[in-house]
Image 1 (tube, rainbow, N blue to C red):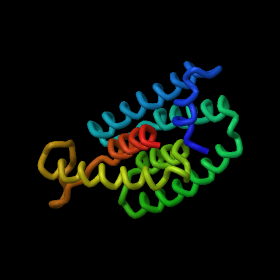
Image 2: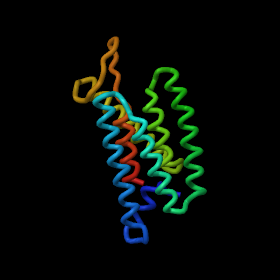
Image 3: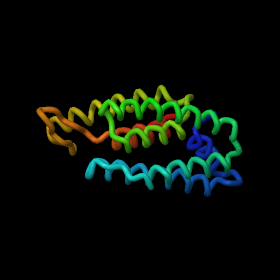
Image 4: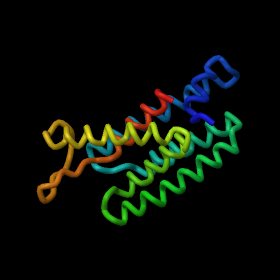
Length: 163
């Protein structure tokens, strides 16, 4: 299965075309909100995560891809467990862990490699930009701490567009 985003992009003239385009737009708008909020406050709201997960449920329900949605859920659950391991080590925040799981719910295992490559590149660019003061960051004991949400959100959107 392709991600719900790409499945709906092809269905613009289909029976549910305008509705699924609205779902895509709401998800992208939520991702922009998450990126800006995390860059400004180093915080990702649970309500934004719930909106993204709810939109996935709505998209999966409209597309009738329950079996594929199940495997997306399994994949997202595995990622959530791994990300909470990273959280327990102090590598990421709890909001970052939840946002990453929500991203993997939408993206699924079939687009995970593309997402991972985009995320790696964007996080590196953000880190370099933050080091030179171009992007918001926190400095702590000669380390630069960057918000992970903007990189996740932009990699998510890039994966949607490229897949």
